[in-house]
Length: 185
Image (tube, rainbow, N blue to C red):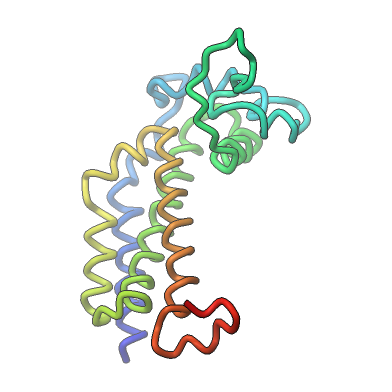
């Protein structure tokens, strides 16, 4: 019964996240859908290039600027997974930013679902509390920046990777850690 409550609660969180940010589906860069994101994303050759330049992906920052060029200033924010997801969005939607925002909303909904599962399995919270946590996380206004600003995708993906890492690690430090074999903590 506990897993059904968690699944139902996480489903509610997913629905809440999608519903709370539903208006972003109408954003379009051509009429103001990007905000301070568009110029650098449009200029990033990794995002907009005809062919995928894997070497460039690994040597440029978030905005497509060469990180190791002594004549170019860059803040060296290296986020290749995020840039790769921008490229996939560009392939699917061009620069209609609604696709970028819908992707951020879907990723946020997945993060909410992950958080509910994490709370139940790793934190061992009761099913109802896990579902409540996921639902509150889904609709909390602090996340609006991560969804409405396209570059906020970095925060969402970071949350997902962190939750996944802790979920994978937590069984290794639990009393029944024999399942982890030589990596037991």
